[in-house]
Length: 393
Image 1 (cartoon, helix red, strand yellow):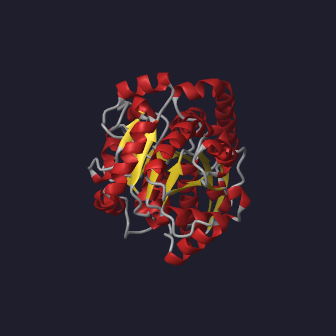
Image 2: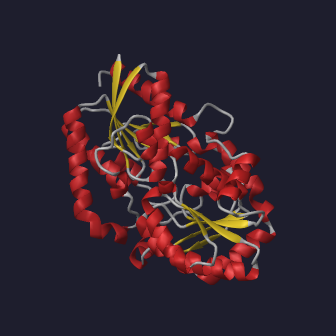
Image 3: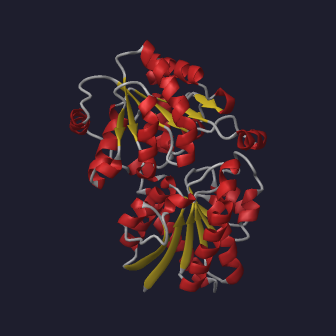
């Protein structure tokens, strides 16, 4: 029996989840076809994206406003495409401001089963989102083990499926050596700089990251700086690092074959002495590579004022949350300054092992050692659809 799946992802982290899910579905289902919106990982699994995914990679209330009309048009176009295609299931992946609006329209005009991948962080802010989400979503795939009860209480079914980061390949010593040779790093220690995967993030964070790293290398002149850039923001990163400390290295995936770019990125993560990163799932990639980190992020003033008043937790870093520690330092909002970031980087450099245990615990709690999360997610979808059919959905 064939299975027709329509998927929608709106940012790189969702694209990675979608790619792993699609791979899992193809392993478990003999005949499966895909339609929808996604990035490079999902396209590697056979998706032909209806439009470039990076059109949707916008974060923050104030940041969304200038693109509101375009995003609203894309929401309507995507929902109409789902309704016309009549897939066996619609799977929306993260990016709730876009994806859940698509699902709402689809649910209002069809009986297509809906699955959302990544439970909303109702334990962090806006706890009533789950109840609202249940009006258009039938089933949820959760990345964190404590999330299913929140979703089930709101009226949806939910499975913890783990996170694909726990099974992604890690660089070998040979990979690291090849990477160092490719970028003429020699034996120099280096700090990773990861100013985000969205243009709006890079635009805000790159200047303060550059200033912070300038202070850091003045105190630690032996350090180089390596910036693994996302394909969609690589040119913007290249422009910004012109004012950064001398000999900053940018890994531009647009100049490399896909497999080489991934290998270089993994080697860069594994070989780094420490990292300065934007808030987001990149903290999990760093944890998988056992690279100690400082997290820094700032929104526009309006977004920050609204979000800090709605927050229910005292940290935004997934390593801190999953490990139930606060060992990863954060420089957020008004604390995202060059002086503050540089001081935290120096502190982490002095005690890099303070984060080691928390990173290992994070990987374990995200499913390391078990079945691949993409396969678990695929099995959850298939089980949900089987039960839905049995109930006459």
